[in-house]
Image (cartoon, rainbow, N blue to C red; front, side, top):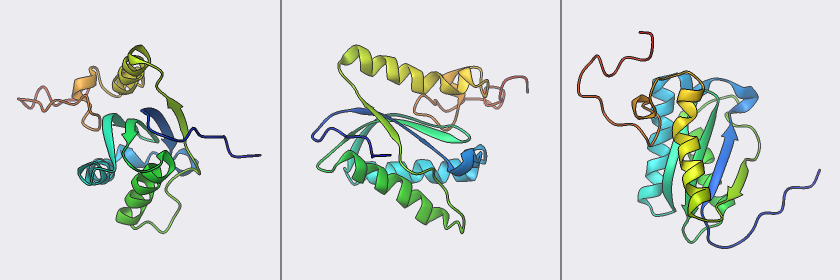
Length: 151
C-alpha cells in the first residue's frame, strides 16, 4: 500500500498516533510526563507551535503547526525523541500517523475541543481541565480537586 500523499508547506494539523499494539503506555504517569517533557522540549526549540495535546493511555492527539520543518520531521522528533528518552528495548509507536490539515478557524476549534474532551469521552476524568496529560489541564488547588471521577 502506498504512503498517503501529504501536503507540503505551512499549516496547522490535527495528528493522531498510537502506541505499538495499542499498549496503554501513557496510563503510567511517569511515562506520560516523559512524553509531555519531550513535546515541550521541541516546542522550546521552536520546531513547532503546539496548540493542543493529549496523551491518552494508548494514543496521542496533537494540534500543531510545524515551523521551518516538515510535518513528518516534527513527528520524527516527537516520537523518536520520546522513544530515545524512554530507552525501551521494545517498539514504542505504531508506524506512521494520521493527520488532517485545519481548513479554517471553525475546523481548528472543533479539533481543539475534540482533543480536550477525549479523556472525558473515554471516562478517564469528569472534566477536561482535570486530566493531567492534556493542554486543557489546570493545576488543582486542593487534593479533593485532584481526585479522578468516582474516587
